[in-house]
Image (cartoon, rainbow, N blue to C red):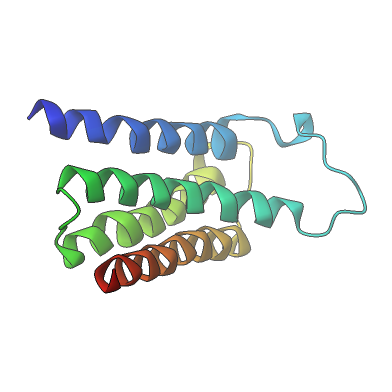
Length: 128
């Protein structure tokens, strides 16, 4: 049980940082260069890539490098994508920010990219 809690701490901290940055921080207080196109979408992509990567890393090591692939996908891809959608809904209805479909797509793409890299890594480890 203690080892399970140890592996939950990093993803939970990443999720809290994402919630803080996407919901609580005032948009006007974030300095954004005018000439950088879609800087916000890149930030969403990187936050959810990091969240999924942290989940995959912790889950992979918790199960001694032999995880159940379906659970791994559930916790590392499905849950973060749902979380990204819920954040956009919460922003729209409860905070002074607006929800954006493009932010949700960037979130999902970040999680999906981490998933693809994980499965490439697993395939490479099996060949060794």
